[in-house]
Structure formats: C-alpha cells, structure tokens
Amino acid sequence: LLKQGLLTVSGMTCGACVATVTKQVEGLAGVYGAVTALLTEECRVDFDASRVSMEEIREAIEDCGFDARIVS
Ligand code: 9UX
Image 1 (cartoon, rainbow, N blue to C red):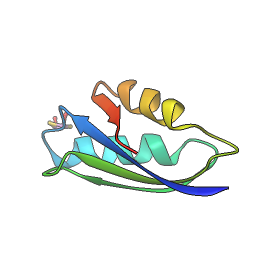
Image 2: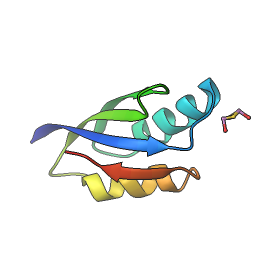
Image 3: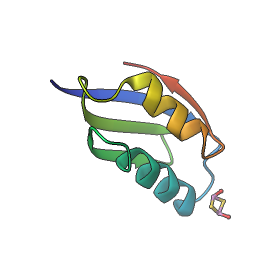
C-alpha cells in the first residue's frame, strides 16, 4: 500500500543534516524515497504502509538527533 507521509523535523541547521535525515529514512525497508527541506523543516516520505509505519520513520529521524513530528 503506497502512501505519502509528512513529518516536521526540527533541529536541522545545515545541508549535511538534511542529507543525514534523508539517508536514514531512505535506509528503512519499505521506504521508496524521501525529500527533506531545511527551510520548511519538512520531510516527505513515499512508503509502503504494509512494511513500515510513520512511527518507525519518526523514530529513525529521532535516532539522528532531531525532533520529528508526524503531520500526516
Ligand atoms: Mo553540520 Mo548539521 O556540522 O548538524 S551536519 S550543522
């Protein structure tokens, strides 16, 4: 089941932070792609909801040291 999710990510201050978050999320099984934006503090994720949950994605971002919230 392909879905798109949106999270807000606070604490990112540079392009390397953005790359870290994106790679971490894209490393999860069931995630097809992620786009992270520094200025809007958003991370959009294309994922298979039968393989990974938004809560797991949120926790993966928190594991990088950033606060993440599920928007939708
Ligand atoms: Mo650059 Mo982003 O040191 O934490 S990776 S600010």
